[in-house]
Structures are given as C-alpha cells and as structure tokens.
Image (cartoon, rainbow, N blue to C red; front, side):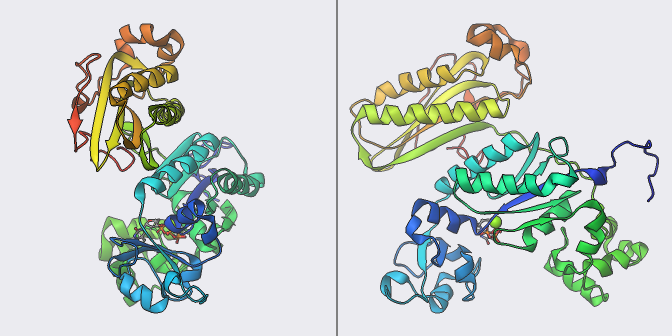
Length: 420
Ligand code: TTP
Ligand code: MG
C-alpha cells in the first residue's frame, strides 16, 4: 500500500467511515406513514396531480408499483394504464393508490429523519429532502460499522416510521453507490479493502458524476463498468473529458477524498402544521403553536444556531397568509422565549379561524459561542460579538421588538423549501 507522505500511523482518508442514507420511495413512504392502510399496497405520488385526475407526472412510486413499470417522471396517464386507480377497482390487487405531492408534509418527515442523523454523527451533509451523508469516523470503527449503520436504520424506522437504505464506505461516492445497491431496506457495507472489488462490476452509469450522455460516450470507448473505467488510461480520459475525466477515473478506483461537509447554513428554521379544518378555538391554535415553538427551538439548539428574530405564520380561510415577526436586541438560544414571543404574536389572531399555524426563528448566526446560551437572553442582547454580522436584511434586524406585517407572500418564502 502506498502511504504517500503521511506519517506512519496517521489515519488515511480511506479509513474514514462514511454513511450515505437514502430514503426508500420517500414520498410514497411518507404517504404510508400518514395513512397506514397503504402499507404493503402499491402507491403512486403525482406532481401536478389532483385526486381523480389524469394529469401530472409521477414523483415517485412504491417498489410494488415499480414492478408494474411505473416510474419517476412518467406521465400519470401512462402510470394509470399500467396500474389503474384502486378507488375505481376496489377488488383488483393490480391497482395502485394515487396521491398528490404534499411537500410540506414530506419536509416535516425529512426534518425528523435528519434530526436522528445529526444526533448520530458530528458531521452531516444534507443533500436533498431524502438523502444525506454522515462522517462517523469518530463514533465507530470498521469492525462495528455494520452494527452502527443498522442502528441508524432502526432508529429512523422506529422513531419516524419510514424505511431507509444505508451504504457504508470509506468515502462519499462509494457510500452512495452502496446505499443504492440493495434498495429498498438496503444495508451494504464496503470496508476499505473491499472497495475495488465492490466497484469493479458496477455499471459505469452508476459511477457518481456520470450522467446519461457521458455514460454513452464511455461505452463508445468500450468502458462498460466502473472496473473498466478504473483500468482505463487516465491520459486518454483526460483527453476526452478534461479534468472531469481524471476525477471519474479516481472515483471508479474508489478514491474520493472529499470531506463530508455540511451544506450552507439555513437562513431560518421553521415548522408548521395544518388543522383538519378551520380551527376557531384559540387555545388549540396556541397549544399547537407552542409545540411547534419547542420543535423549532430544539432544531436550532441542535444546529448550534442562535436566532435574533422569532416569527409566526397564521393561515386564515380561505388562504390568507399572515406573518408576524419580532426582532430581538441580540442573538439567543432560548426555547422559552420562542414560546413566549409566539404566544404574544398569536394574541392578535384570537377570535379568528385558523387553517394552519407555523413558528419560525430567523436571522440566524452559527457561532459556537456558548456565552449567549449560558448568559441568557439579557447577556446575549449585549453580546454583539456573538453574532457573525451576517444578518439577513429581509428580517429587518433594526426593527427591535417591532412586529411586521406581511400578507400573501412571506418575505423569505423563497429562501428554502424548509422555510414557510
Ligand atoms: P429519490 O431518492 O431519487 O427516489 P425515491 O426516494 O422515491 O426512491 P428510491 O427508493 O429509489 O430512493 O428521490 C426522493 C424523492 O424526490 C422522491 O420520493 C420523489 C422526489 N422525486 C421527484 O419529485 N421527481 C423525480 O423525478 C425523482 C427522481 C424524485
Ligand atoms: Mg430515495
């Protein structure tokens, strides 16, 4: 083995333990969580689809539905030909339950999954709604990595109730291939010595970074598998694909030294929930909002985020979106204050009917400054050093303790899917 210039005994990047977690048929699994009678039944989730319609495209299909040729991006009309609606053929098992996409709900489920991942790893890179990498080198060892990965899967299944596939490998690109290798409910562990053998027979199209066009070009060069790619002449690959060719060659050889790094910090953290119908009882709205306040504050604490603005969202019939926010004198991590401010901001809506309520903290700073937490709100208010200065102007940070009114369009509505 070539150790390069590393000191003897120093861990090489190949000794890292990297997990890739990808939820199985995620939107369909969320629908099954919400509606347990769908468990074990074919489920198709449609984008731009409404109950009873034939328009829209398949966002995802459960594995049972995939057996009938239903797949992502397919027209719903095509899916319906392969697997008619159960509602119209209640006795026919070769039918599926069709549901429209409900991204807000899936985001909530995903947040619960990600919370578990953050609890189990110091470094988590969230890639998409249903996918994340974890570096757990400091928490486990190759000899027990499989047990660790099983624990991750079981916690997600037990605490959130949706299935995940997990790949374990010494680097990100191999871990991703591993999580996909035995879906659904997969658990594939590729220890450092097995990486080359594991990758060799993998279809070249499944190598991280190879899209359909490049896969075709590689096949034209006689490269069908990751093994072929690993054996190819790197100069030839560079001549054909530039620097990218070299990178693909490295990936195919199981070399990928990219560290698992968290993606950009979010601008705000929020949670919201809808009532079954318009809710007239302010106490019930408040009770729900306080639970959301606790959830948001907990998420902020977990992410080491201090917030300087606390807000609520209240949707009143028919679809009027009202947001109120209060900026604090300084950044804090104070769950009780989130509850208190949410309650005060909601008081204005007493006597109104409410369809949906949400709580948000924003104007975030990600300092590891524990002083604000330990010193409490008052100390934090004067602790400008605790803020990183990277405040979000849309939060009007100068409007101390001033409520701001915004209708229809939340000023941060486009910041992230997770935001409201
Ligand atoms: P994926 O992880 O690609 O798919 P999946 O989770 O449904 O299935 P798998 O078990 O193979 O991982 O995507 C995650 C979610 O993203 C998926 O549930 C629905 C959504 N999505 C779309 O809306 N459109 C698409 O074309 C794809 C591929 C996914
Ligand atoms: Mg998935």
